[in-house]
Length: 378
Image 1 (cartoon, helix red, strand yellow):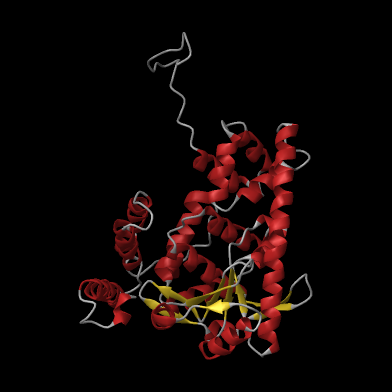
Image 2 (cartoon, rainbow, N blue to C red):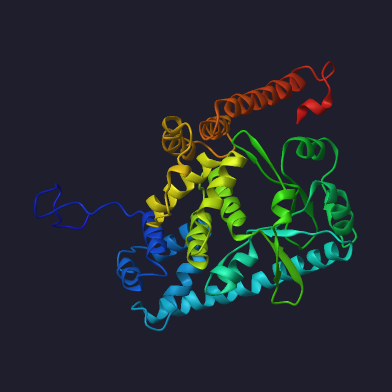
């Protein structure tokens, strides 16, 4: 404590609020790109820039903050501007390898006639962000139809990727929505064969693929993107499925709504209801408003059928965030959260039954390996 400082709160001497880098990062994202003056004022509240950058990196949004700090009119120190510029340059260099791998994968799939839609990732940076490198991507996510899954794997293996195999691959094919392919010195490639699984529903890829639109990648090849209404649904459900763990997913949606102001909301509502993801979509809209001050057109159609249960999702998210990563308590909280957001009671029951059955099988295989099938270990 500094000598002579007050030891108790009083009307004239109050203890300053605890430094919370996540609160500042969230507020900075809520301010840009609309309110650069507010962004600049918030910069004055930063007590430790390195700590703030670490927090922003963990949330996937460091590039956004560096970009606006480096702008000529921003009232921050010259050294901070230079530091932000250097970090942006490094980010751009790191992304070149990622983009090269993406183009190579797209060309390999196109050569065998497989339509592959790029999910999330680099092309969001191209379309939504002021500069492509501001949107980080840890892996490559491609969506193909279930009938094209094996031809797609063969095409990717021809350029050096190795697909998952054995019991894990079998479990993923039966119960999940993507397989992992790896290659040295290359980002992991997630090959999706369903649009998503979760919230008690399985969303096939085929309908989404039928509405996909071509997009010319700056490197010269053609990629496929989901239609705007489908992409909004996918991004929103993906963010909800992962309990909004990183601000990047919400900031993607904020920029997406700016990029596509003329979305057909009646169509979005109808598709969400038919797919059984109204609860997840509604919660994502609420998260956007709560965290990034981004109101979304709200209609009665977006209210999940079991709104009272969906209200419990927020406290469950808070509880989950306090659990050790990978622990049983964290996984149990995640299961409860997803069950609460199922649109229908039957979906919740199916989801619980599936998860509990998997838990029981894995325990049985662990303790009775000579009696139960090895496949139960997954």
